[in-house]
Image 1 (tube, helix red, strand yellow):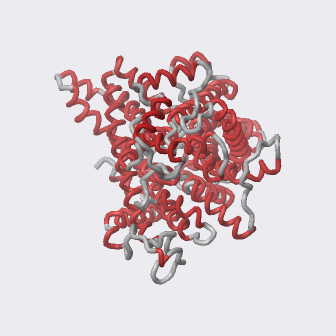
Image 2 (image 1 turned 120 degrees about the horizontal axis):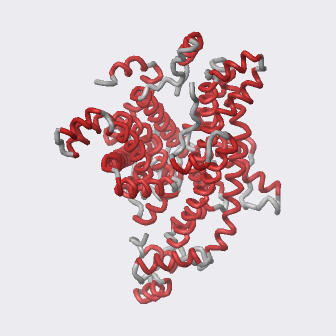
Image 3 (image 1 turned 45 degrees about the horizontal axis):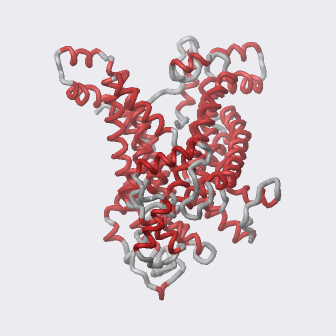
Length: 307
Length: 299
């Protein structure tokens, strides 16, 4: 973490610009920030502050306590991720089922054509293009200052709309593909055949029998995709100027604010792990054949479908 | 070769097209110096922000540099970083995965836990932390991207090794007293390398995007050296007046990433031609219809 210790000192002293300071001034500041201590001591101090509730102490650049930084930034990212996940699940699962039920007809091809760019085009480029397009065609650009939904709902909606749509496009492309593939896989199982033989309607078969059994891999994918989603928020937050964890992490990384980077990265990992834990627990709700103890003993590889 | 038959069975015009694009881009990257009309680094204030035309095919940027030359040159750094990071990550991941699975015991447990904790990081967050730690240079970016790949490859190598370890020929080789290095390199790796290489090839496109994302955030290759992500970042400020600075690098980036992704899918398809609709011996008519449908099913 500390291989380039000179950077932060010159950053603080020069206020971002170019300035020359004497060695004594630098040395005094280093002493004050505790950067002269042994690395183990610094790390120990950081660990201790994580435990005792200071959450990594304070920013090296402006001395803000990290707890207040996180309290300001965390809701933004959380809202962004929540909107994206809700939107993409609402849109993409039905779309995947629809594509599977119309397989190889024009509806299916249309869905596939929509999803391919979502996976292929890097989101920062499409974000720039869309911003440019909106500016040229509608003379509209999103508001600059972020507000929380409880302060100014309309402003919040405007600024959050584009990043959420882009993230949801990327996110749901994967879900649509997986949903379609697994529906097509289970549709050849014998229980679907028996459901058909009972004379159930096609809609009933797809939703109650096929989708229900395809849900486990879809939910697994949601957990796996979360890492990509967080990486995506990181980039889009900095493009759209949202004051979230991702943008904060990038800013801190650019000025080498070590403590903030450490704490925010830890928080993001924690977020990801806890979501995956929740997903592991929902398996049982989705598929009662899975028992919790079974999961503990061996890694879970999807429902076993006996012939 | 083991996979030659699959190769000729699966190939189609679309794959050939994207292979051609990949070959073209690699060609551009290698011979960039001979192909570009202008020096990508020399600044010339008198030719600032010129629209695409005769002299500057893709226009010029805010420092008067030729966007076309920079895009072509950018392909070199993108491919160099993406391919080296994938090679590095694959080799390290394969070693960790294969050895831990082969040896078992405490080594396996420890390496598994380390790999699991690496998997817990969102890849870009891990890369940013590493770049901050080691400083931004092309070598650090290679390491940062490779570290995200290592646990995935290790996991793959481990699962394949675990199943091949129990094969009779491996047990026979051990019985006649072969050294474990010998067993791993002569009997295990030849069988696990196919899926690993296919997975790694699929990751090249993700590595290209990751490199541009890092450069875009300002944590990648330091300016003035051209990289697609860095060009997008620089062009952002001039988007209204000079959209060509952002449009062309992004276009190249998207096409390259997409072609590599499709090629990776194709390779995976050759190596692991898993038919998603396995033969259903009880109901042969289902089997027949499903095989017909499988042909158009890209996965």
